[in-house]
Structures are given as C-alpha cells and as structure tokens.
Length: 376
Image 1 (spheres, rainbow, N blue to C red):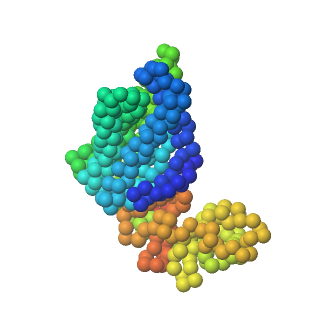
Image 2: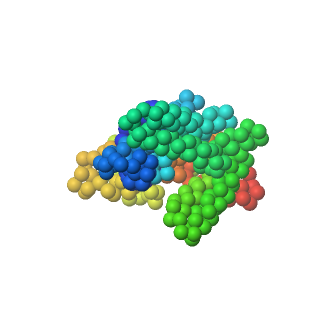
Image 3: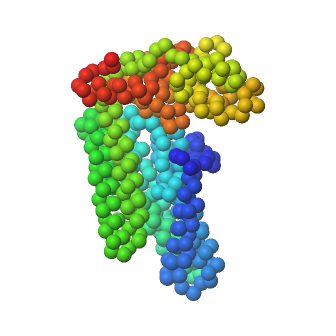
C-alpha cells in the first residue's frame, strides 16, 4: 500500500504501517481520554485520562494487528502465499494469493472476526472483574471499552460485503455451493458494491442531519465500493481467461538485457533502442534473473552509471510474476504486483521463453467480449 513503511515481521511475513496509523491512534486516544473516561470515571486528573487514553488506543491498535495476524497465520497454514500485513486507518489489510479451495477461503476469512471476538470477550471479562475491585475503575473502563470495540469490529467485519471478512465468507459459501469460483466472486463483489452505496447514503443523510460522524461512514462506504468494483473486474478477468494457457498469450521472442552490464553500458547498448518501459534480464549464463524498469536506470546519477551494475537496481526474479508455459493464465495473473506492473515472465526451467504483458491480457479480454476463444 502506498504511504506505508516496513516496521518488522509477523508470523514470518513483512509487517507494514501506513502513515494514517498515528492519526488513528491519536483519534482513539482523544476519544477515550477526553470524552469517554471523564464521563464514566469522573474525578481523575487530566494526566490519568491522557495516559489511559493512549494505553487504550495502543491496545486497540494491537488488537487490530492480531485480527490481521490471524488471517496471515491461517493463510500460511493453508499454503497460501502472504505478501505482507499492513495497518492503516481502516484497521488493516493482508495481501495474499487466492485460496485454492472453498474450505481454505472460508477458514482464512473467518479467522479475523474470531480473533476479534476472543479478544473482545477476554477484555470485557477482565474489565468486569476489575470493576468489582477498589481502585481499578480506570483500567476496568479501558478494558471494557477495548472489549466492546473488538466486538463491534468483529460484527462489522462479518457484514456480507467484499472486501469485509463477511464478504469473503459469502464468497467461500457460494463457491462451495455452486462449484464456480468466478461466479461466487462476481456475486460477492456485487453485494459489496450495493453495501457500499447504502453506507454512503446513510452516512450522507447523517451528515445532513447534523452528525459529522457520518463522514466516516461515507468514507468507509466509498472504500468498499472501490475495492468491490476492483474485485468484480478481477472476477470478470478470470472468467475471460478460463482455460487459456500462458503459452497461448505470451509474446516471443523477448527483448532482454544482460544483468551484469553497467547501467551506462546497458543504456547505450540496450535501453536506447527499446520502446519498452521494463526489460527482462539474463545472467552471465543466460538464465532469467529479473526485470529492470527504465525509469530506475534514469534515476541513477550519471556519475555512478559506470560503476553500478544493472542487477543492483533491478527487481530480482524472486519478486517478479513468473509462470511456466503450460500453466493456466488465470492463476499466473494473480502473481502480478504493483511493483512489477502487468508483466509475467514465462520461464521454462531457467530459460526465458516469453513474456505476458498488459496488452496481451487486454487483447484476450477484447476477444472474449466479442465472443471469440483464445488469443489471436
């Protein structure tokens, strides 16, 4: 996600934090310390309220992380590739590959809300217990606030709207019932778009009636609409590519460059004569080693171009979308990332045999729309 920085690892996958997280923590701390606690536990000092607010906000952020960690942990257990976990203003997101079975999809989707339910129930239980002890009123209220927040998070996430967990549960259920994954994805994403529209309408009505908090509902609704729309387009893409092998869509031969060349020599001998924005690379033995974007070469200071090797600024093969010629194109498309763009390197053994670009995929989509089958 743009605007996020890597801060560590969780269950073996990169953990990232968006710039909006400190803002989210500040809002939670203010709401708890300046508004809720003075009403529920009057008579304490401002310092007590401030510390309790910060602690409560930190605990809630930690519970959001545990929610996403549950998704990532179950996904890895089900042999699903997990790219990273990112915390941001709306809680968090876990980027992962597509589950191969409806059961795996269901397990991953339901794990997050279950984690929030457990956290919420435990926090409420401890909070109620502390409330009966003298001198523990503030910690008790903080824990009960944390408990109710997690219960709300679990219930809200179970709404049947992609990309919420409830939408993923609906996807898995429809997939299991119909046996048609793309049909299930289309139905669930359509439900997400409808839910998003309803939330925007409700939020806007709230704003018109004098409730500024309705803007948050509008924002969440717009987010759901956008993501659900993207998922619907992805489902349509998978339907169009059904049964198409990578070899049928790839372009070959491929313009390549040697990764051991210096940046200046690469620019002079290779990049200056190409119209492509990125080029696959081969190592000294002729094996595929990665991809380099022309803009990254241009960003190297002229004084360093004679000493820096292309492989030092390239995207290594391990981070590129790679597929075998006989593989289903619909499965290979899921490996495309924002970093490499809409490009799939087709590798047979260690030998680069072709490339699938966004133009190749668009050509197949147009042919599908016209009622044809397969590539030109």
